[in-house]
Image 1: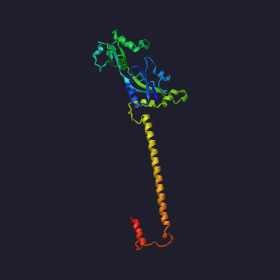
Image 2 (image 1 turned 120 degrees about the vertical axis):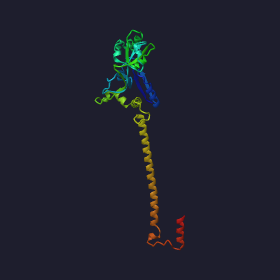
Image 3 (image 1 turned 90 degrees about the horizontal axis):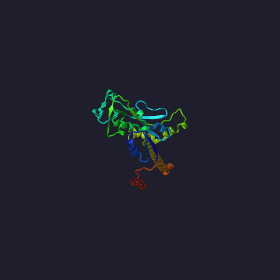
Image 4 (image 1 turned 135 degrees about the vertical axis):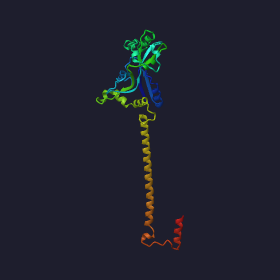
Length: 282
């Protein structure tokens, strides 16, 4: 049994991937740990406290590097969080508030709400108080911190965020002993298995290492069986051929004709001829 350690930032919901991985790998264990707000997912990876991370960054600003694999999974739409009975409620839940409209509303600065001071939850609480300011957040964080006294709506003109899967990458310019975490990740089959899960590969896809390994093992078994069958058939053929050849040569080498005497006519009327014909019909 093997295990994989995954971390994820607030707002990212890895439940469906965890369930799919667990269903297709019942013999393995996936440890999924949510990070507190303000925690650095990349620092956690660098410290070896997780093998893979689901993280968030501004769209178009991927942290991918020669030492970090990053697979972008999706983009999050920006939304405005407003108190109940705000003008934003005139827009439907699937509508997008024009940028010029949202620009006229006072907004809170996320920098004024660090994680140590309550973070996003504190900012949404200020919005709910009716202080007159709004907050712009990724949709997933707005849902995570949703309250009965606030609502959120999609907004245009604000930067989107991206959610991605990241893990250490082997840098070919460095010796292995200087990047042990990357080497371990490259040799861990569960890393590729989880990548397949988040990318939506079917459980039986030949691109999954576990499936590929099973198919290769089955192919080796079939090859051995064919080899044994072919060997057995060859031995059987040699044995049959040897017996047949021996009997034939023995018959040809014995008998009166072998001493140079003329063969008797098959149509003879003697007793010997009758016996030979009778033996041939039995």
